[in-house]
Amino acid sequence: MQSSNPVFTRSEGFNGRGGTAYADFGAAPTSPSTHEPYGSTLTGSGRMTIDTVVQKTAITLGVVVLAAAATWILTGDVVTQNAFGDPVLDSGKTQLLYTLSAVGALGGFALAMVNSFKRVISPALVIGYAALEGVFIGAMSKTFQLAFGDGVVTGAVLGTVAAVAGTLTAYKVFDIRVGDKFRKWVIAAMFGFVAVTLLDFVLHFFKADLGFNGFGGLGLVMSFVGLGLGVLMLILDFDFVEQGIAAGLPERESWRAAFGFTVTIVWIYIELLRILAILRGND
Image (cartoon, rainbow, N blue to C red; front, top):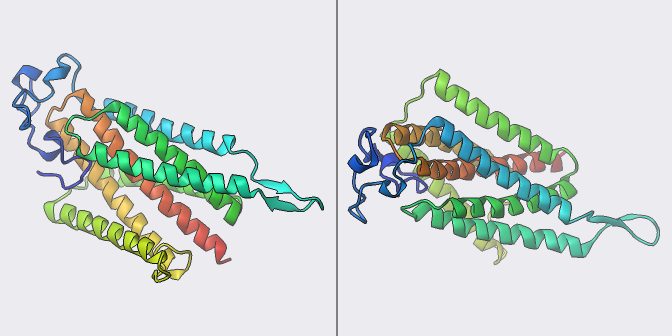
């Protein structure tokens, strides 16, 4: 069963092309690019399991959280007092938050593309992606809290945890099986969603945006759509990992799985943060 997820398409095992679990790497399927046994460079390192995926995902998400916390703390108190004792925003620190958010977002996107299309996954690049996403999330979250008040960040974090736990529970309890039509529909919807939001972002510079990325009613609808897509992508992630384990991939591929989960979880968090911010702004 072939994966359409760009994170997993470079790995034969995630696409059901790796064959059944093999006894040793010397009998593994060959890579189409090198014609060498797939995973032969990691002889004796073991195979990917649920435990190794959980461990690598915990490491990757831990880096995201640490980088976000460091960004939040090191940027200091953005609210200061003027000569009359009234609270005012420090324009320099506010600009710093916007700059860090942009650097983290663009850098994270670049490394996401590299990780998505690398045939041999690089743990260092996965960690680098997590660190940049952490900087982006830390700066963005602090900006949102300043703009929309306490509670939006905490709510988004708790909502993300609930969404991931709830999706995993539903996936296992209801024994969800991913079919080709479902997979193609979700991937097509995801690319369509990204294309529309990017178009609206570009139109914003020409004062012609439609409000898909805004904080009005249309922006709220788009964020709910994005949240729904994030949950569906999480289901695909679970399925892709099961396929990789069944194919007997080397343990190294646990980093690819961790990267895929991190991309989806960050997506869900951002959409939840926007939803709570818009609802708070409309109170």
